[in-house]
Image (cartoon, rainbow, N blue to C red; front, side, top):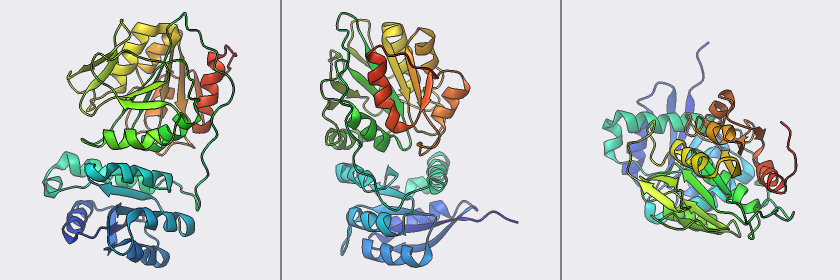
Length: 346
């Protein structure tokens, strides 16, 4: 019996964008475009009747915009949603994740149709997200961990995080649980489209009491500050505890790369480091996370059930790089307990 095709609803007020998406998706025999909608209300009506496997959703549209449509769909006929936008609308697009959307991507252009790598990458993402189980209502914000953080200010410490597909939402949940008086710096590599990092940072700032910013060359690592790698630059930490951004070659297709981040963190901080690998496709960061563990640091991999895509954590677990494997909502409490010198057992 042949496998059921992935059915897609394309929602965008631009006929040109809808045509580009159709051309991309229909180049794969496992994907079928079953409908198009020019606004959010049309999307709601279509989903209620035809139940697609996944929806691509524009942000700004007439009659009803993307965020309002997402909120209605996720509250009534929950369906995996991939938000499609431009960099100038990125902040609002990331807010859609709070309403239940799974991921934000840039709008494709005609070059995607001819570019096999870009085309196949988008189709792979679409297939992965179409299989994600979604709920019919969104849970409220997770509570910030209230347990006091044991600060060992005489010793350098750091929290390093690597994430990819599904990462923005996972980061918002994790950072939202960490108290604003967290006494150590946090460094993050998140795979992101060009021009979208500023929007991600602005949105993350609304979800956490910590200060969130795009990392800059030579900055001193400060406690309670979240440094996010800019697109197209590797983020590393120096022995002087400053930010180092490089144009070194891509690592397995990525720049920034979690491998580069975790390697530098292991070398500089050793057993004082905490490394976390979150949801994402592929295996970025899964090897050098083990360097932190080998140096005596504490490493965490997100568990399969709470991941949007269980690629990177799965690789880290298989390589023995993770000290513990935890659901997303238990990662921040585990970090606080570790810093408070509690003994964690696998």
